Amino acid sequence: MTILGEPMENDNNKNYWRANLKVSAILLIIWFTVSFGFGILLVEPLNQIAFFGFKLGFWWAQQGAIFVFVILIFVYARIMKHIDRKFGVQDEED
Image (cartoon, rainbow, N blue to C red; front, top):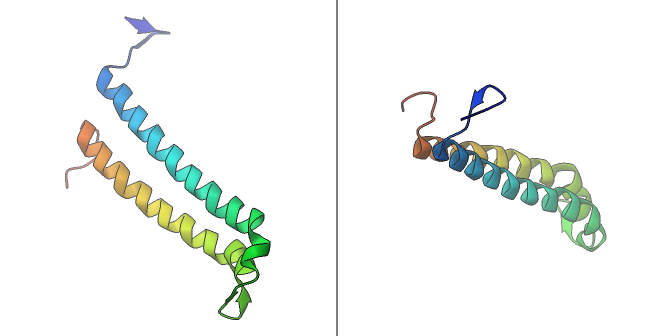
């Protein structure tokens, strides 16, 4: 059966994309919490704490959220490498 001229995805492809979207959603929620939650909503309580001579809320909004974002990129790459292998869609053999 085809949809708009393309074959329907098999269960393996559907499960792969379901796993991909689940990982993406979880990491985006973490990113949102770290950047918006700590960088904007909780900035005043965090500013009561000194961190390397700066208010922690200010430091977190300017630097901390960026560090977490970079870490999330590496976490995403590692998890997706595992998911790619699990579903047999990796680009190259390791």
